[in-house]
Image (tube, rainbow, N blue to C red; front, side, top):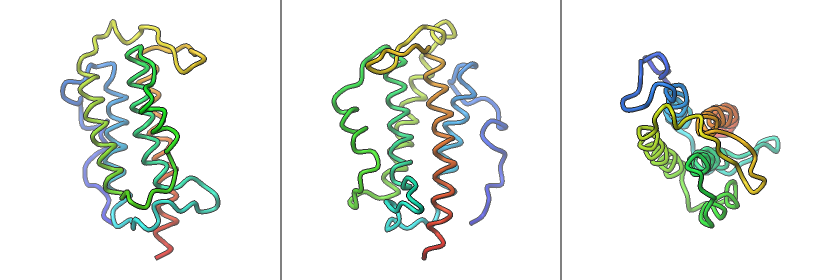
Length: 171
């Protein structure tokens, strides 16, 4: 596996059409996408649902980062989660041998494209608008929700790369 030859996303300058205050979140989300491609090179689908040492599977992490991004976008739009989103949440991490690593990576990339289109519509004044999260309506802001999606994706990427590294030794 060859390490990327270019700087990390945040060191390559602003991402096109992303407002300045959302650049850090966009950089982290894009870095997640690139790192998934790197760390999942030669990853065998047979290991997608393995839970080494009782830890979450690679499949769970891939589903979860996509689901969290989707849910945070919904909350940032001051909307409630749909039944489809609740159903997706319930299925995160459930073993599904009909799905592949490539399909889960593509789902994240598609959700990222959707997120970046949404980011491009936001103005600075929108970012500090108050938003609530979940049935308890916990307080946040548009910026807080979108930043959370970014940092959460990086947290799960870190867990995924450790799990992936362990599972690749099981060949």
